[in-house]
Length: 158
Image (cartoon, rainbow, N blue to C red; front, top):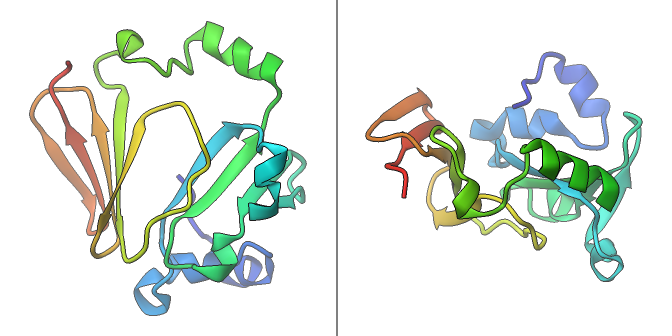
């Protein structure tokens, strides 16, 4: 999770996260979805490269064209690095490896469907409506409202 601390710095940055932080006034989505991996060459035209922080981060062009959609970005990682993460257990991608408390699903609510690249990981479900992010974790029977636009919902393990 990211939190804006300097509005002037954010407005000067090409990502313009100040608009997302002021989502109630601007209508921009306050949410983003980040992936690790690589963008296939045939999909690269849908993204632009942001490398001001050091690592190569591919930002979906919807950030500029449709700010009401969640920000979609991919932190570039090669296959060797992804395989090391899988072996450490940080990327499972299959139901058989799920643990209690693990993220099962993201439910993104908003006025417009996000443009997501192909990915492995928890299911991302879109529902039209006011901006809201629900994180569904594998623990039985609870829902915690973190803020008026973020809910953590618990679900019985399969």
